[in-house]
Length: 123
Image (cartoon, rainbow, N blue to C red; front, side, top):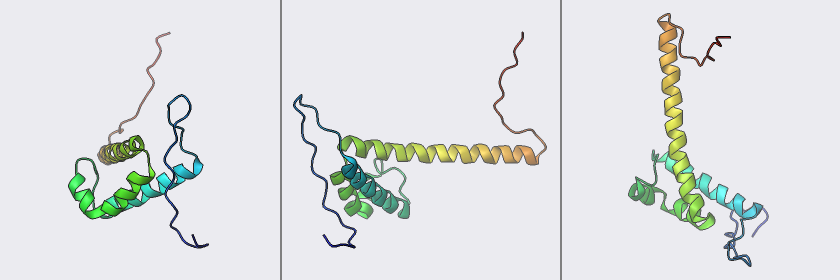
């Protein structure tokens, strides 16, 4: 590996501990995983793919190389978690944007907008 190259060797596979459970990935392995995840998600974003689980064929066709690196460098459970989390965060962002738009429309119409108020005590 050269001094200024960006490619790193893939992390080693987790080793089983004496009790049979697998050891948690170290900092370097996690960094490899996150880098691979970010590369895969950037490809999905570039190709307009939100859910790489439901749109697996399209994701594999357009981002297959990045997906293979992601699956190689991350634990299988992490891959599924990150894919599902990406969809959840997208839906959350859409919901927040809709609430903001609804509030802006209410304010423009002279309303108060939605807010969370604590209940008044009757003491």
